[in-house]
Image (tube, rainbow, N blue to C red):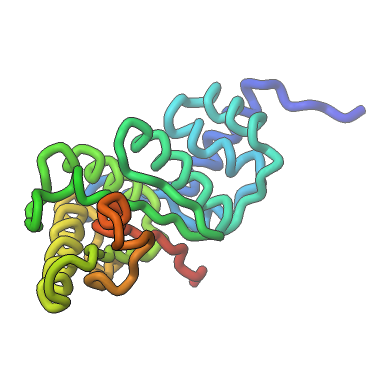
Length: 219
């Protein structure tokens, strides 16, 4: 006769597997989730990881049952980051977009910077801190911070402004514990609009900083 695991036993197993996927960063003292270790977990156990870390055995069991059909791997690793980012940013104006195995966060100009400035507004620091917390927990990703402007003004001015705004975001993330080795900072001026610059609403959409989160290859 096949013997079934009791719920408590299954939960304990999931917690043990979850903890085996975690390491402590000696520089920051924060818990990080190892992509390589996570890939070795089964689908249900991998899905239980976040529940185990946040709600103990019961959370692990419930999370595993809820998403046991989702496989581990790069997609799974990014799934957990996406879930946490969406939860952290749900009351902000920062958009979270999934593009294949990448995540793109769009920070609109109106909440991030003063007009024509590059110093971070106080109200964006809390969500940026939340983003940094997730990035620190999931260290096996590369991060590109890219600044963009609308077409108003000289091209040289827009280029410089976009670079300075991207750098401000990068420096804040690094100040919250994100390893500088993971981050690349770019400025594109007005060369990559996402809307028409013929209208004020279009210009507002083009004034943004994007954070692209890309999974690293397994080593």
